Image (cartoon, rainbow, N blue to C red; front, top):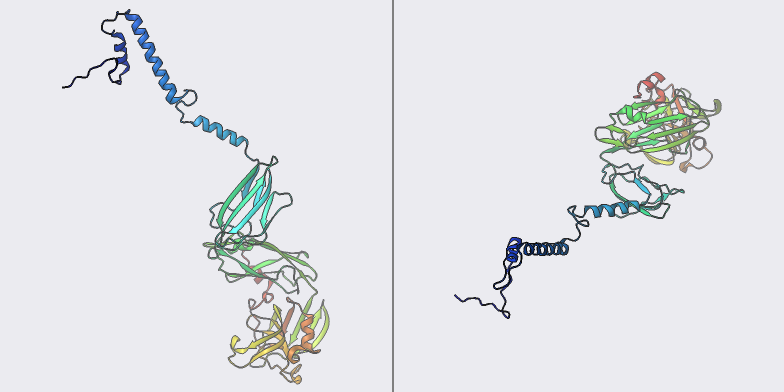
Length: 443
């Protein structure tokens, strides 16, 4: 085996030694060298060893007080505290929670405390269509300018600044309640309308309502006249409101709809929240007497005019009872096949038509009958006809009555050989007694 020869020009390779080996080496004097005092040698060796260790620690780990064993947590905590101290005082709150899947279509909005909103953007997530809205004058809130769509995903970004100009931002993505899981009631009359004294408030819901009590209790109808107003259910999808007697002329009716979030039944929630008001006009109640084939118009309790009419024939009599004008048409088509009369008639230009029932009873102009029938005989299929001209021109009884009538005016038919119209056939709940009406309330 080749031996390794060492010399000043060929020193022995360095070897890694443990502290104990270094200590032993320090205690061993080189060959031929004077032997120092044992205690001094040991002290020098130990001092050198710890000096080397301190050097190594300083090079790799830094100052113990700067790092230690907290994995940098103390340093991060300090940074967090500094960031918190400099955070904006503006606190933004979006009404719809981020990730919500049943958000309201009415109440979506933004509010801020400790600052003012500077910008709010609401967009439909799929299409990117922006929803217009407005920040309040004091900068504390924002609302969209229109009702949101049902079953639609939206994104909202709201920005604000506090008094020191420090910004704050809030983001949320949410989906409004779906059509399948919500219900809406279409209603009449519309906001701002002037209607007759017989006009009820009528709701038709797009889904069957089983929780009638809660739904009815979240719709309130009041009159400036002080009349008591009570709701009545016709089945599970229609709810009407009326006082005991006709509305007082000139009164103002206010309807508050607070159905947003109200459970209508298993798996369906209301989404409407609004206030509607309308005005009751002058009182006009017209009475059709089938014995005399005459209609007497009373305005504010006084006879206004008498008009010859032609009611239903013996084979097709007109309903008896109190009926309310629900629609008015300058001209309309009347096809007998749509109301069970086959092809007996189809008149495409009936003038001055006013609907009295949903089953097809109208009070309308008649230009095709002989003038001699009016005031003398019933010839219609159940409607009440007034003399008119083709195209509705000229000065005729039908035109006069059409122009003098409001939606909501009452037409009473008496002495017909037919039965009384059903209260839910049109807006004709006045044919129920007050006790029967109240019995249909769920509140």
